[in-house]
Image 1 (cartoon, rainbow, N blue to C red):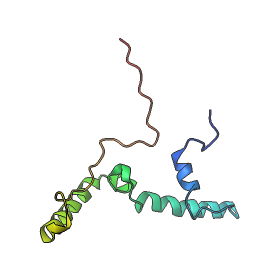
Image 2 (cartoon, rainbow, N blue to C red):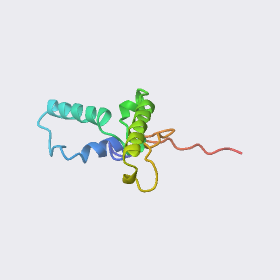
Image 3 (tube, helix red, strand yellow):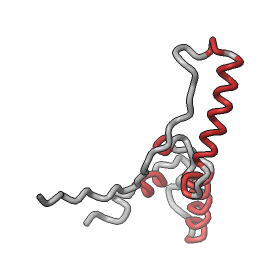
Image 4 (cartoon, helix red, strand yellow):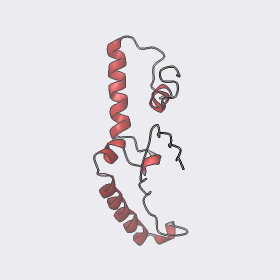
Length: 111
């Protein structure tokens, strides 16, 4: 078994945050930092692996309607200035069918 956080993508994301302090001054300092960090990570930061949505948007089921709204904005931008788009009209990123932090290993099929 690996040490706590060694293979955890959340720990790595937190550790490499530019604002992550060298040391926390107290337990309260650590709690306050992590509270702010995870609020931003889940509700503000858009993730490329989930179609540039926030985890909260995907979790609460608003991602599809947001994607549709983005499509309308992109359609309007294309209609107003098609010369800005070289190959084709832009489309918002597709939503994945599934998203994993630690994808479970696939069980071998027994013949």
